[in-house]
Image (cartoon, rainbow, N blue to C red; front, top):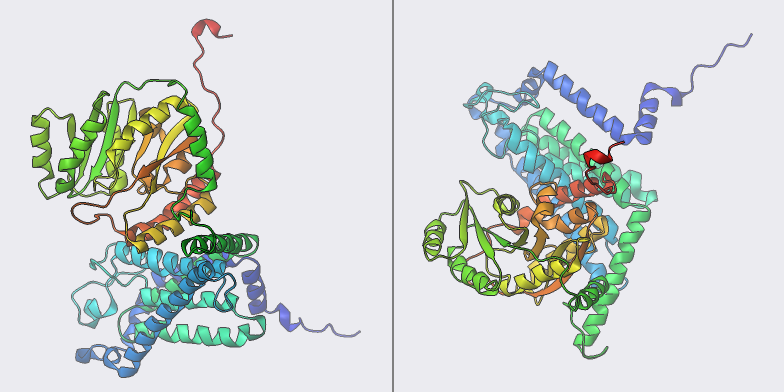
Length: 540
């Protein structure tokens, strides 16, 4: 008898784990988060032991002042900045050059940016570090600080901001690993190992200097790796080719407009011209203008969210009143925690018999919440919305309402579309990019959802699912309910007083999560059946 050969080396435990990780990476990473969390919850002193190895009593964490550690930290920040700049170039380049011969392709650039924004940006710095409040090692009593040690996933720490759980810089270093799938196959192993080594050194350096516990670093890596796997699955393959094709089309259109601008392709070009879909929608709207209204709304409720806009509201309310002088209307100014005399202004105007109602938030809750509060308090059967900064022209409100009346019950929303934007070039370019991404993912048939001028039946308005940021997704949410949309070109004006109270950067970060949530809502929607009440005598 010949003895059986021992199991082949590829059947070892580590090999089987590696195969399972390749086949089911998300499940493997989720299991790793659970296992790591259980380990540090069962043995919380493990964090103290590891950090204690670099603690030197009264000298604190001497490595924090070491030039090498400072250089490693600075290198990590420079690496992150460099990668983000390359990714931005990969988006801008294809729009400026028909066939760029360097850098990342558009879908690869979007993939890299989303990894950084969702991982180190939103999930780590935007949520985990702020919510759990875990003090850093150098802040706990074991290492000479005033705070008590807290374990992982325990939201009772004494830290009030920029806390320890989890490590933001380690997450940014781990995000460098998203470059590995973009490397040529023949260099992927060698260069990939170098990227892993650099990211590990930058990350563990945060433990050496007493800025983070070991668990902060390990969990930040696993979280970011999950984001990398998710974004790669979402943006590569056929969807990636569609994104690149979209950028190629946009590049050709930009070249066409540049040609017209410099006299090589005609003289009638207009970069703010409506899209083909918008032109079709407006053509149908023009034909509807000759049709008598299908319904006549009794009262128009104009909802205006405003935070510290007293200077603008003074003339804006007069303009609304003039525009709607032939219709029964009310003006609901939703005061989003203003402290600039907005209340005194509205009290004076109400005393002058202006149809103004003051809806006040005791603290600022954001534009979406302000619009929702106004809709809930509205007494009219149609709601028209507009921004409180004066950039929206109230003269278009009657057109919005009358278009909705003529369109009949199948149309749920008339959305203003800005032409001649009065914003800065950076804001206009970022808005166009955001609108393009939103249309690509949601197919909401609207080129400009940022325009505050909109008209919708009050009953439908109150049926839409609410979340912070919902006002940017009204077209998608209305389509989800089974209604159509009509667009109307409106004039944009420069702001007269003050500056924006709702930040562009915050909108961009939160908008990514909102976009994912609305996409999920659309995927979970079913076609609304015809609903009617059956009279008792008709019952079988």
